[in-house]
Image: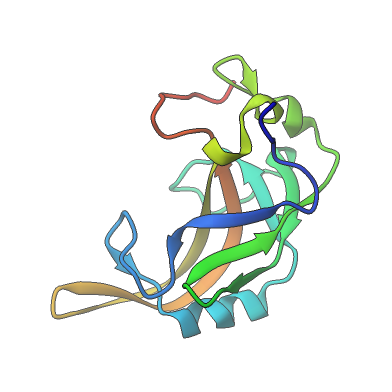
Length: 143
């Protein structure tokens, strides 16, 4: 049987400190560490509108705190909360039915960017939430 997202599970964001992200931004390690120091018990929510900086409390499934490991992975321990969002479905499959290793964890936040020699660096960052998404290789919609 596959593992699923459970309490006290270590989660890892889908990008690393000091390396380009999918959207071609570099989050310096020191900026991330400051953002994590400023934010405790970061909400973990399912699905989101990428243009919306608000948190839908009905989509929160837990919280975490992050650190950056020696390989620049951004990791945290997931703390589960009882929430109706655990019953939300991605194409008729609930989050608890998706194998843990297939889930994608990403962050939402606000900040300032600076372009240096064609490379976009995050110069200031405030984390709003962590978003958990189902596997990327399939088209999913939240129902």
